[in-house]
Image 1 (cartoon, rainbow, N blue to C red):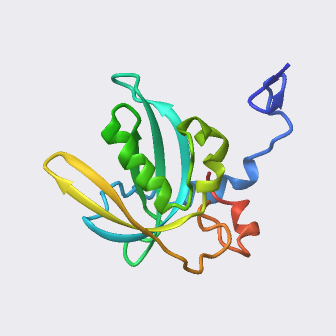
Image 2: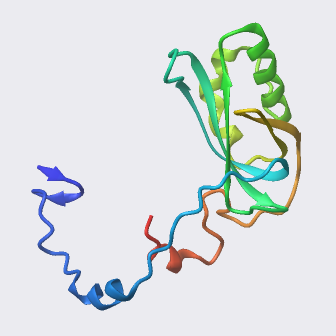
Length: 165
């Protein structure tokens, strides 16, 4: 039986004592969860998945967009494209078209989700009251370092081994 990646759930072969001094002196960094301000951003599609809304259990396409610039680089914007009404479908079809994905039938979307990854876009973030909207403006072609969507740049292979995630 294997538990948490370790045979029999044990960690006996993993000696962490060598890191005790560095761990003790490491500073704790507070995460920055502030929303990026309203404005236009260059983003790359980092994740996209078909799922259901938590409240009404309606189908939706969930987007995670990594900001490339010009400000707030490395932070994320999120967009949920609901799949409920003809109006929702119109917006979704427009977003997919901007991303370069032209489908004959919506039922073909699951087979083409990977085609949306690493697409670079210009988006507009606009807050109205308590609601945040992300509008896809246009697809853009910019030079993006390899691995930018995953948060890893070319040549960062060694650094990836020491990142906490």
